[in-house]
Image (cartoon, rainbow, N blue to C red; front, side, top):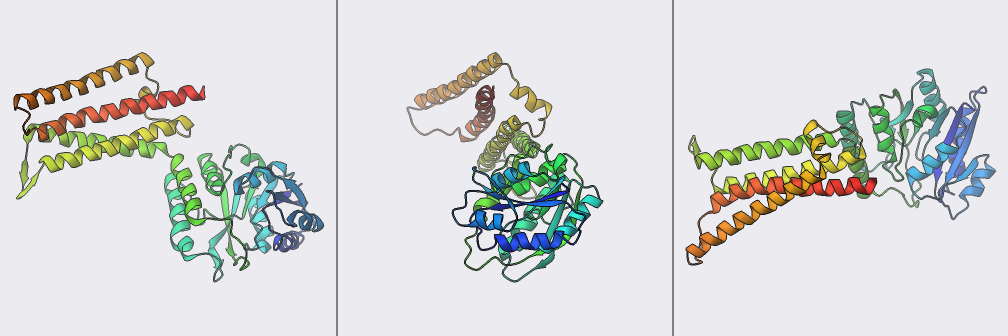
Length: 375
C-alpha cells in the first residue's frame, strides 16, 4: 500500500461523505497509486460510520477520546508506506491530496504539510484571532526554539512517512497532537516539505471541536514543555543577577548615580521578588527535566541527582538558619521593650539569601519525590 488517508471523525455525518469523495477524486488521477481511506471513529453517535463504509472507507474504532487519540489510532491501523490525514469537517482543500503525497514522496521527506497560511483562506474560514495571532505566534515559537522553517504549525492536513512517525513517540491525545508531531520531528531532524493549500469555512451549524483558548494553551504548554533548558537558563540568570545586586546593596547601601538613588529598601524588595520568581522558574525546569526531553546543565543535574543524605542535612541547616534569624529578631524586639524595630534593610538581605536556597532545596525535595514515584 502506497498511501493511507486517515480522517479523525466524531459525529461528522454532514461532511464525511464529501471529504472521502474529494480525496478519492484527487488520488484517482494517478491510476498507479495504491491507496486506502481510513476513518478513525472516535465514538460517533450519528451515522458517520455507516456513511463512511458506504463510501468505501475502512472504519477503525478508537475508544480513547480526543483529536490526537483518533489520529494515533488511525495511523496505527494504516497499511500505507505514507499516511496522510486531514479533518473531516469539509474545511481543507482535499483536492491537493495527490500533490501533497507526490511532493512528500518525491523529496523522500518524513513529513509534508499543506500550508493554509501560504494559500487561500476563504472569508469566514479562520477566525481573525487565529490568523493574526494564534497560528503565527505558535509557528514562530516552534521555528525559534526548534530551528524549523514552517509557515503553518496548526495545519491539520499533513502527509507522514510511517517508518519515521514510529520513531517520534507521539503521545498527545488532544489538539496539541499537531504541535507534538512537528516538534518531535524537528528534534529528530526529520525532513519536511510544504505545499500551498488553503482553508474553507465549515458548515454554519456545525459544532466545532476546537476550543480557542483551551487548545491554544495546550499547544503553548506542550511547546514549552519540550524546552526546559530555556526555563533553566532564565531562572538561573534572574537568581544570579538579583542576588549579586542584593549583595552589593548590603555592602554599599544607597547608591546615587546621576541624581538617581538606587539599592534602597524598595530596590531590595524588588530584587528579592525577582530572585524568588527566578527560583520558581528554575525549579519548574528541574521538574520538567524528569520528562527527559532535554539534558540539564551540570549544576542542575547535580542537584537532581543529589544524595538523599546530603539533601536531608541541607534541609536541616536551612531550617536552623531560619530559626536563628527569627530568634535574633525576637531578641532585638524584646530588647526594645517590644517597640517598633528598624532592621528592614538588613532583614530583606537575610531573607533573600535564606529564601532562595530554601525554595531550591524544598523544590529539589519535590523533584526527588517525583523521581521516586517514577521508579
